[in-house]
Image (cartoon, rainbow, N blue to C red; front, side, top):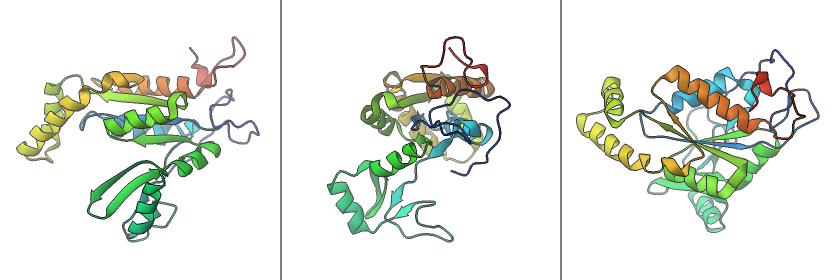
Length: 230
């Protein structure tokens, strides 16, 4: 959500979304990340967004029916809607995805907001559950890349969850049971990255994302972003 701009060392051909200071701007694209809890998905996504601002990644701004907290501002952290307006927009089919977390408390992503961010040249990131990931991919087709971050094994996932020391044994068992179910969705994603080594998983994810965000019609022999072109 928060980003800092950094000049690339070279002047590569434009990514989807264009280039700083260039009139040559393409609409953005969508990146969908899903994974079982403890797979390292959020760590990889945050690394991409913080360390590679040239990718122009941005989370989509969601809507919620709850009241703002503290210094939260409408259109910054969330779009704040009344429960009535939220339900009306559901009825009109305006949401890409939504969820009623508690009775009367909704969270969701407007199709129109995603399109605004894409037209502004942002590459929109979704960090969602596996069902949400599959549904968003179906809606956007080739405009979206879906990535599944997979632990090397359930045994390793158990070790990671226990190492966190944040969940009770019962909660860990629930997470593991859910993970086994979520792993059955992996084949429905465009790419699967097995996170058995975090540094390697980060680099592989970066290469996959760069390849997806580099327009396919570059002149033959011309380098892609920072020399990455397949």
